[in-house]
Structures are given as C-alpha cells and as structure tokens.
Length: 431
Image (cartoon, rainbow, N blue to C red):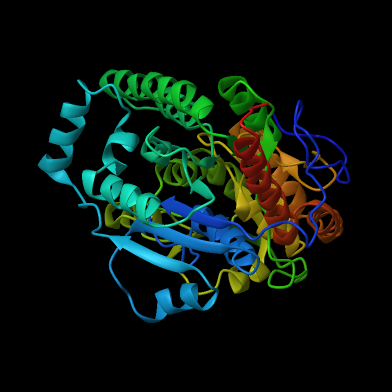
C-alpha cells in the first residue's frame, strides 16, 4: 500500500521510537560493515543507498567495509578517500547455464533460500571472525538481509541489520508473475525459505532497519521489537529541477540486470505503450539501465518507438529530456530511489502502486498511480497533453523530497540506529 500521508509527516514507522537527538558528546563508533560488493560506482539503487549513507557516516565514525571483490584502483580510492577502510574477499563465482541450473537444483534440499546460500562462503565467514577477533569493533553492520547469516553467537557485539526490502515478499511477487508452473513452484519455495530465514535471523540482531513504514512494521513483527525506519533518499544538490521535458518522450530508468525491472519494461512495451501510441503515434519510450541482457535489448529495441540506451554515465540528461517518467513495476519491495531522483528534478511520474510503494506520495498531487494497462496509458496521455499538469506534479514532487528525503536526514537516522544498538548491547537489555 502506498503511504499517502502528508509530505511533512515525520519519518517514523508505526510502533517505532523517535530517533534520539544526536550530539557531539556521543562516542565515535568503530563499525565493521559487511556487504556483497563495494558500493562504488553508485550505479544501482542498492549501491546508491549504501554509498550515500556510509560516506556520510565515515566522517563521524571509523568504518571498515568487508565485501567480495578485487582491487580496482581509482574507484576504490574514492571509497578510501572518504575514510572507509576496505577489506576484500575473493569474489563469488558468476554462474550461468548448466552450472547455475545445478546450483538451483541443489538448493531444493537446502534449508536456506538461494540468495542466502549464494552469498555465504567459509572464506567470508573466516574473515568476519578474524576481524572481530583481532580488532576492537563496537558494532557489526550487516548491509542486506542475506548477510545476517554471518552474525554468530561467538562474538557478543552490537549488531544492526539494514534490510533493503522484505525479501520474501519479492519472491512471492515473482511467483505471481512467473510464466510456468515449475517456475511458480520454485519461486514460492524460495519465498517460504526466505520468510523462515527472516523470522529466524531478525530477532538475533540488536536493531533492524527498514526503508519504508510498511517494511518497518513487518520487520518489527519478526524482530519482536519496535521498527526502525531509515528511508531511502536523494542528493538534492545533484538532482535539481530541470523543466517539463519533451511532452511525448517517456523514460524508464532502472537496473536491467534485475528481473523486476525487465518485467516492468516488458509490461510497458507489450501492454501499455501500444495503447498510448494508438492515440499518440509519436510517443516514444527510452529505456536506461545497467547491464541489460543482449536478448532483452534485441527484443525490446525492435519495437517501434522504443530505444534502449542501456547504461549511461549520468542519468540526469535523460531525466531532463523526458516528459513523463514511467515506473510500471509489478514485482518489488522497499522503495524506489529512481522515483525520488525524478521527483527531485521536478519530473512528472506515473507508477503502479507497487512501484511507488514505501514512499509518502499522494496520487494526483505529486505522482499519478495506475495498476492496469488502460489506466496507466490514460494517465500518461493526460500528462503528455498538459505541460501545466507535468509542471504541477513536478513542483509538488520536489517539495516532497526536500521536506522528507535528503540523504543527510537518512544518514542521521542510521546513525541513531547504530547508537541505539550500541546502547542496548552495552546495557545488556533489549527493547
């Protein structure tokens, strides 16, 4: 369900405690953060969030980041220049074809969901244990649900799990839109395994954070304590209002190596765009996102009026040029940073309710929402035909992100969660 609260409502979830006031007298924390990859360059939603939060908190705390990867030179230098110490473990194998099929088959007998099993290795666990044994850390920060598995009872340390989605919800939605019976069975099995993992591992953490009020309520239920909200944000200086754009140019923006985004593009191209072009033949769709599979590019780019740009160095010129930003997601969770970036640039956005989930947007005020092809096409056409409507939505969207979604405020919320975990652990109690 989309949060329809007023834009100036406070960023707290139902049942959560207000963040404590931060003062200079609070101690500088020594934090071991663990994640799947170095979050720079910040070219995916997950990387954008992790990078913007950690680089801000590194100015106030001593952060060591352990993740999979190999030294890449200049890109990693940028991370280190922010004060983040990097520790790397040999990367995971990229599986495809028969090797991937075999791993998926073996997962049928594992109690863990595939995404947890894939990211867990002895070499990473040994490095976590080595760092916690040899160094004085105040806090273990797990940056994504599967990495909660690395928290062991061997080390009594304050811990924070940063969830980016309700992972089991994404698997359920993937099953709902799977093409065949076997795929639906597999994805529902993954959803059940992931829900069990979430229920079993969230209570082991001192604090669990969520990116949306809806997710915070669910994590609070599983973690058996109040929910802690650390929302997604946007760089308000980097993304600034840029006008209403070309009226008949539509833009889809999202990482194309993530299935829910490819599903959204397929849905847009096959079911929504033909309705738009039947009334407005000059309407075009540009698709921007990293790592699009070659067969996907060939298939989508063959559709008249569709251009697949793939990965670009800077998404802002694409956002500036577009008249309407489309977010036709049917599978997803958490909240969409790409919507926040579009709103920050004063752009008109049409989204499904799943796409806008977790954001304090209001249908008709700062976004338009539609959940079937006919309504979605009609709302896009409404905006293509009215520069005034595009400008009004864009102005209201910019107002919303200025009031609620700056990365500085989000970093302060995560810092408060760190201190809360530290205080709970030091006091020997849990709320």
